[in-house]
Amino acid sequence: MASTLNAAVSLTSSKSSSLPATSCAIAPDRIRFAKGAFNYKSNNVVTSRRMVSVRAEVTTTDTPPVKKVEKESKKNEEGVITNKYRPKEPYTGKVLLNTKITADDAPGETWHMVFSHQGEIPYREGQSVGVIADGIDKNGKPNKVRLYSIASSALGDLGNSETVSLCVKRLVYTNDAGEVVKGVCSNFLCDLKPGSDVKLTGPVGKEMLMPKDPNATVIMLATGTGIAPFRSFLWKMFFEKHDDYKFNGLAWLFLGVPTTSSLLYTDEFDKMKAKAPENFRVDYAISREQANDKGEKMYIQTRMAQYAPELWELLKKDNTFVYMCGLKGMEKGIDDIMVSLAANDGIDWFDYKKQLKKAEQWNVEVY
Image (cartoon, rainbow, N blue to C red; front, side, top):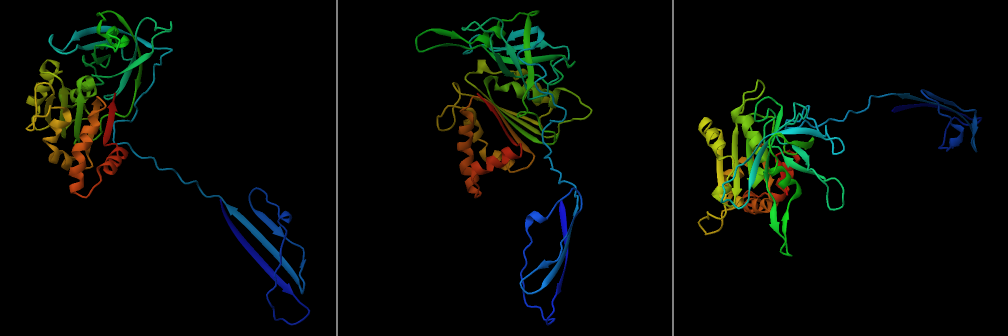
């Protein structure tokens, strides 16, 4: 609201026309505001030396409100759907496939499973779904929902937009009391047979959505089943044809696992590499079998350190996007690599990483 004040003051004196400074106060309670224009006219106001006639007018004009400029996301967010199905009213899907994808001598089992959703769960690459295991918990209540990153593109493994795939490691460990503990939901999922029902919620999440730019550099850092969202990315980039998307950038995957027998989806990655050698790079870090020149175990950050200068140069570009999914400790190891490289350019890495996050170029989903 803008206001304009127009005032006219006339002074009347029986004496000289010379007008020394004179003050006059008008009580605020004499002023009345009404919607729209405001007019005030006083009677003559008497000062100590002369009579002052005051006429004041205030007019108001409406100005349009300032519109808030919304930041346009660099990710594929337009039209994304979240929480269509919730824990109280889940969608019941059917198991189409469930197969173990790690070797028999691997330290732990990882399974790939495909569920039918008949097009009712319209997810995007990088989102997650929830699973509610059958049965009740130790308190006699229904099992709680567990979230899993989706391992298939939006079209699904069958290419008809009616399935969703997960990559799940069976959780089995021995606690401090020597008791064998089995993860409720992971074991439920790994034991499912084709034709079984499975209660699903979601889809959820926007943090890991793909960048819209088909010319982007996409650096993917995964440990174990953290490969799931990146399989969805890579299928869209290299195995599918879309009228509105053709990937022409660089997709660089780093996958960390303990043993060669624990590697996941390597046949698919080999085909992608053969199909688009200029657009796809993959590097494995096998911690129990490989070491660097210093004899240190080859964790994902150790493998990345071998390409540190190249990675730092890529991170300086505004169309480079980093995605991280897997074990929480991975991020600290990557910070350790980047601190000195950034410092060489007079840059504080942690401040720079905040800028990357704000620009949606540093995306993390760890556990």
